[in-house]
Amino acid sequence: QPYPLTAEEQALLFKELPDHLAQMALFKVNTGCREQEVCGLRCDYEVKVPELDTSVFIIPGERVKNGDERLVVLNRVAKSVIEAQRGKHATHVFVQVPKEGESKPVTKMNNTAWKSARERAADKWEQEHGEPAPEGFRRMRVHDLKHTFGRRLRAAGVSFEDRQDLLGHR
Image (tube, rainbow, N blue to C red):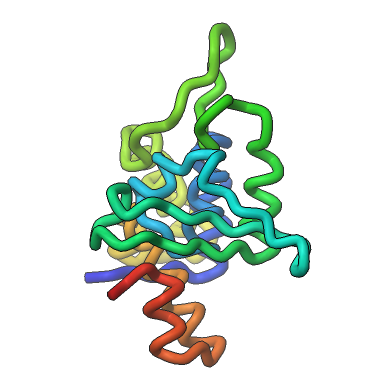
C-alpha cells in the first residue's frame, strides 16, 4: 500500500538520513521523480527558463520508466536543492562526497542508510507520541515519496491531468 508522509513524519525521517540522501528525498518529495530518475539526473538535462527565473529538467525517454521524455518542474524547494548540488560533480546532480577522494554519483537510494534512518525515525515517533509508529511509516519506501508528492498535489487542488503530467504518468 502507498504510504504518503505527513509533514511531521517527513521532518523526522529527513533528519535521520545522511545529507546526500536527505537532499535526494527532498527533491523527490517536491518533484515526484522516481528513484532512478533522481539517481541518474544529469546536469546537462537542465534547461533554464529565464522568464520564470527557474529551470526545468528534461529527462530523456530511455531514462524514464514509461519510455517518454519527462519534464521535471522545479518548485522553489526543488530549485534550492539543485542550487546546493552545483559544482559537486561534472556530470551528475546527486553525488556522495566521501571524506577523501572524488565524489561519485549515487546509484541507489533504497540502501542500508535509508532503512536504518526510517527505523530511527519511527523509534523517535514512538518516543514523542507514546504509541507505536504507523506501520507504513516504519516500512517507508523510497517510492512513497512520489506518492507523497501526488497526494499533496491533490490536496492543493491540482487537476488530475496536471497531476499525471507532473508525476510523469502517461
